[in-house]
Image (tube, rainbow, N blue to C red; front, side, top):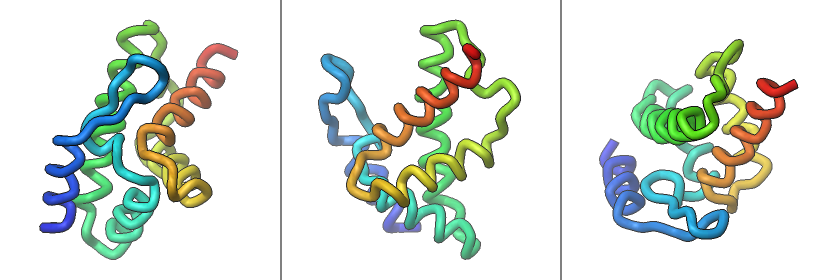
Length: 114
């Protein structure tokens, strides 16, 4: 738990430029490898890290929904999104969690606008 608290604090204090002028803060700046570690720890009974990531992702998705008036999670549950993010992050461990979130939102957008 201490590790995730420190990681959360460090990432909250850092930022990076993503997609032009947009800024990413918090857990979005960490690597996908750290998200995979959090997911594995959750399966071992320590859900705190993955809960922090999913909370960050939920805020990100809420912002995207508010800007587009699209219910991205219609017909989708949180566990499915969590698994999608984990699969993306396993395939791209050096990418940022923000990149995973953007990719997830692109997929959800395709699904909701078909």
